[in-house]
Image 1: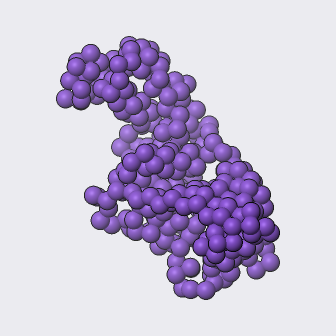
Image 2 (image 1 turned 180 degrees about the vertical axis):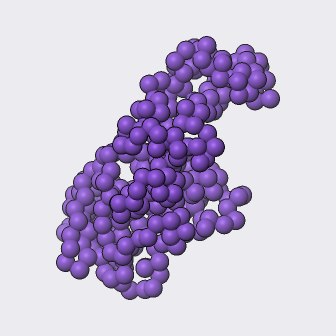
Length: 308
């Protein structure tokens, strides 16, 4: 599970396909109601050991995947619909997804995917064995997840990772581990596991981290606010974080402090402006955090250009 990734960086591939030639190059068996007008633009980030994330914007088309090779059954894809509509059909059963919804494909027989309008999809692909090692069973076929819309922390985290990797390659291991836990948590919740089961706790921590990454600059972000967005009790959230050696409040402060340190050392913004931009309620709160964690003042940190 994600072995030998310590020194590995993410890799990125971009593509732009159009017309009948683009359909011929697309994965699977792709068709379009208007082949000449077909277009597909996207990027794919590889994290190693079979885990990849792709974001694609496509015109209406249909594609048949799965059922032709044993390798198809070994991979699982989770598809987040960011705009437009997407439909999956297997063995006569159809699932429809709109913006803010997500489904999965784990094919052992042919699955038909249909892009019903110009749509933007973000897809996580990973080996079925990875999810199994993290504690979840993946049903064969297709299905859906219950999300909280386009601001769901799972999607927010994945988009944050790809945005960071889009600027320059990032270490693959930490992102891969979190993405694996996020996907596992989605399957466990979909299957109705108890919120205090180990796998769901792990997924809950990962989704909490995703929210913190996305919203730490909001000074109103608190453990209570995170628990409310994840539809769990503060107690369950605290337990998930305790298993990872910190409290939710400490995780929020750590994220804010990391961003503040970067801004202090890399910009000439005022300390009060940096405090506001990174989620600290006051510059005094930022100074206390710097002293408690790094034993340094903001002025000395700027002068040194790095954390001592």
